[in-house]
Amino acid sequence: MENKINGSLLLDFYSSFLTDKQRQVMNLYLECDTSLSEIANDIGASRQAVYDIVKTAESVLSGMESKLKLVEKYLENSKLLNACLINLEQLKNEKNAKLVQNTEEIVKKTLNNL
Image (cartoon, rainbow, N blue to C red; front, side, top):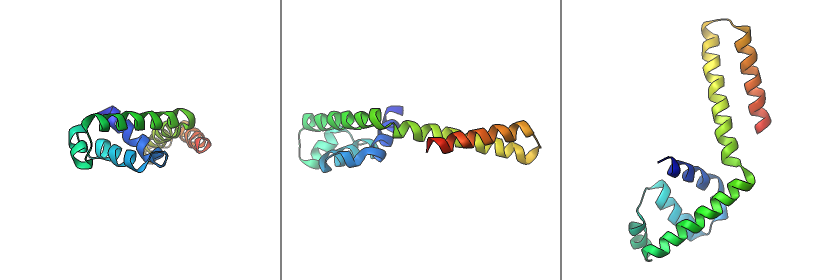
């Protein structure tokens, strides 16, 4: 499941590097959770051809991520911003200078990642 979630993120960020056919197949495979056989029936190709399209597209997507690291940065920024939200919720309930400083550092780190 985590693999499909990661694949969906890669597709969201790098789909423009795929051909229209690859994008269509990967959307069905990742976003719609369609089997290779079902995709083959939908697009009028063999299951092996769909498998090859998926593997090629996965290679393109992972290659782009290894170069650009956009998904990695997105996930890190999401994690940092969620930590800020937790800290800010605690700040509502108590006055804590260390927590304020910690939240400030997280926000600065997140902004530097953008």
